[in-house]
Length: 407
Image (cartoon, rainbow, N blue to C red; front, side, top):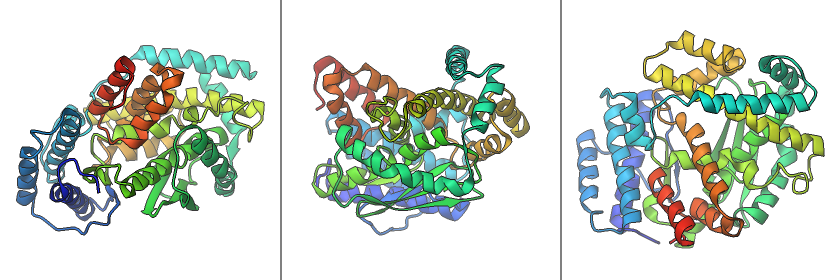
């Protein structure tokens, strides 16, 4: 096994994460400790013991090189504040975002909304639609909805092709990698979920209460499968088995500063595989490829309104009713999607994770767009083969762009 510190340290890190997951599940009924690659058994600790563990582990990373030290310090800080938070201590939203996710707490600028709005209008005008953006979006969506009994069939149509192009253009996976099951679910606030039981196998679940635009669904399918979450989970498992990934990172926990990149990569999944290019995406016709590219503009715009609503609610600037009305009226969302978004960002264990979708997409897309074509392989190695917090990723990208190296 590969260790940044040593085996004992790694097992203590994983056990703290496991304990945090256990507290979250016992207090709030929500799973946040999502992957335990080596199935390390929980050694249940009291809150005082957990605080002491965090303090002791901090003392052991002082002499590490900058990258592992900063990565582990970011995680230990998130451990401390997540523990304090789920035990009932009150924090300003900005403090939670900074300490747990290494993210800012701010309204997304109106200039960004205006820019994407103009792009969306142009896209829908080119398709022949007229009227306000809301009217055009509703008409186009209504013509491209999937029935709930079509969702899983539609997913299965694309998974093989998504995996093939991922292997070709993005990252290699173990031969045993596969999606075991794809199913629908109702009554949840999320759109899609990728579960990793282990041994390179994954399960996908999609919310079939949601009215899915079929082009939006392809983006979300790629986010959850290839080159999104399943690719990340499976690749990390392979690297661990090859002693090429540190055991200190051999788990996945919500409410940590790796969440942003873990969502940001999948948010750019279709871009990574170049499926907005009809010469690469041969499973869809030319008109469908144009739609796949255009829907990403609308999805970005919607995500801004959702993320702003999360900011307004969690900073006390809007109440539930005002947030939902804002998303429906200004964000052009339907009532169900707006309500589910509110349920997501108001959930006590999701308040810091919701902004990771917007910021993750932006951080990763900006980084990807800045990389010369001959360095894209290096970019993917940084993203898929190295564990990173937001801060360590930004430094790795500076090193790649300025020095042409990834280590």
